[in-house]
Each structure stands twice: as C-alpha cells, then as structure tokens.
Length: 365
Image 1 (cartoon, one colour):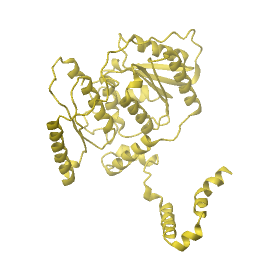
Image 2 (image 1 turned 90 degrees about the vertical axis):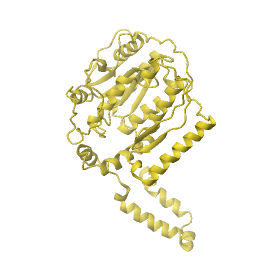
Image 3 (image 1 turned 60 degrees about the horizontal axis):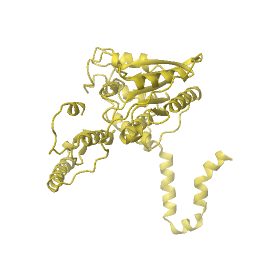
Image 4 (image 1 turned 180 degrees about the vertical axis):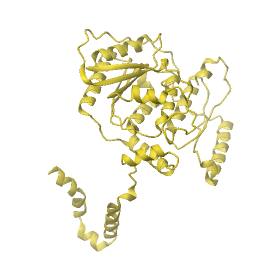
C-alpha cells in the first residue's frame, strides 16, 4: 500500500476488492487495512473474500468462492460500492511532549523496554520517548529496530516449527528473546503511517513467528507511545487491544500526541509501573478467549509439525477442550433431563436458580 501511494500512478476509474486465505486469525483487521488505504487513494471498494486456507479443497469452499465472484460482478455492474470507512484529510502538526524536569533516581530490580522505529526526523516521537523514560520510576531501555539488519520478512517456511530457530542468519530470534523479551514490561513507540505501525514494525511482527503461536510474553504489561491521530484509527486500536488480549498481556494504555500528551505519558508510565509491581493480569475478554481458541484448535491439529508450539500449549494448560470437563457435561445432561420432565420441573421451581448460584454464594459468604 505504501508503494501504491508513493508511486504517483493514477488509479481513477479503478475498483478494488480482495481475496485472502488464512485461519481467520486477524482476518478482519487485515481486510480493514486494505479498505482504509484504498479509501485514502479514492479507490471504490467491494467487500472481499476471507476464506479458510483449506476452503479451495472442499466443494463448499469452491462454491462460496464462485458465489462471491458472481456477487462481486453484480455489485460492479450496479456501481454499488462500500462507503469508505475513513475520510482522507491533511496531517496535523505533531505535538511535542514537554520535558519532565530533573530525572529521579530509578528503582532497582525491574526494567522496561521501548521498541521503536525512530527516524531522525521523528522529533515528536523522540520527545514522547524522552518524557516516558524520565518520569518512569524504573530503568527503561530503548531499542530501535531501524538499526537491526533484517535480512527480510518471514518466509512462512516453517523451519522454526520444531526448534524455534529462524532460517535467516541475521540473529533476530536471539535479538528478540535476549534484548526485548527479557524485560518486565514492553512498550512500542511509533508514528501512524497508512493506518498502521508502518512497514518496519510489520516486518518485526512477522519475524516474531520464530516463537510460533506461543504466548511467550504472557503476564508482561504492554503499552504504546503513538504519534498521530490514534483515536480516529478504529482498526489499529482493535489490533493493539486484540494483540495484548491474545498474548495474555495487560494493556496498560496508549499515550498519543493528540490531546494532553504530557498527562497521557505520565499516566501510562505510572500504570506500567503499577502493573510491573503488582503483576496485574486481568482475565481475557472476548478477543483473548476467542483468539486463543483458534490457536488451540490449530496447534492441536498440527501438533505433529508444530512441535515447539504443542509442547508449550500442553505444558501451560492451553489445551482447555470442553470435552475434558466431563463431570460438568454429565451434570448438564442430568439437569436437562430433569427440566424436560414436567413433574420434576414443577418441583424444582425456583430451586434451579438457587442451585446455580450456590457455589458462588459459598465463596462470597
């Protein structure tokens, strides 16, 4: 998308759609990214096809693909296009974070890291990083991935599936584990570009597949320093929240330069410090629970290939299949039989509700 935008080519009169295959993990955010950038370029859009990677092997999948193509041609003939999800506008001037004054001595024993793709011209982002490190009560390393000699993006070769070792010889896997993941909190600092964190972070994220689907940083607080209109980026906000939820990371907050940048940074620093000290880890929501179920089923099915993932999931109790809860299942059969019997249902009356809350009442009392 960045190349399209900088190419100078004229896309007037063109219409866009998309076809993707995956296991439906983050497929909605991937599609929305393409849609938002097409809207920036004024390219009319028709809803794409998000297929399972194995759909083409099934009669149903092939039928759905043909139906989608026929539907797309019908929409194209009518000139019915999707209303743009974003409105192109001029970029505002970035706000510079103020100095934090004299930096207090740092507390020992814990340390955070800020991962950034900082460029020399990123004055606003640099000021945000400087203020955070100054007000943060613990030590904070800054790692600039612009300085890392990436040999390329993830090749999807699965060479790392058994050992966790990347086929590239640039040392990224060791760099990730020993320079970044060893910290007590991880923050990311970036400027919004093309409704995303930019291509450098995309490469960084893709190369993290050397850890497979393993939630190796679970329990580590996350936070973000963002230069740009973050509140307007619905898709990016969903992506960052989902990433923390699936990984089992507390999202301590996002400080942007949209509003009161100094206050937002100070609040983020205090929240990250609290989460580090208290090991704060709230339960996962819909995004985290749903995302991990996709991973759970996928890894179990492919455990013969993804041996490192399988070992991790098994040792961390992430194979939480419902059929393992056989006592609860049999209890539900018994209750269902009782509720289908008119006589027993009348006798039970309100006692059914009382029985449901009895275990909770025992704990609360």
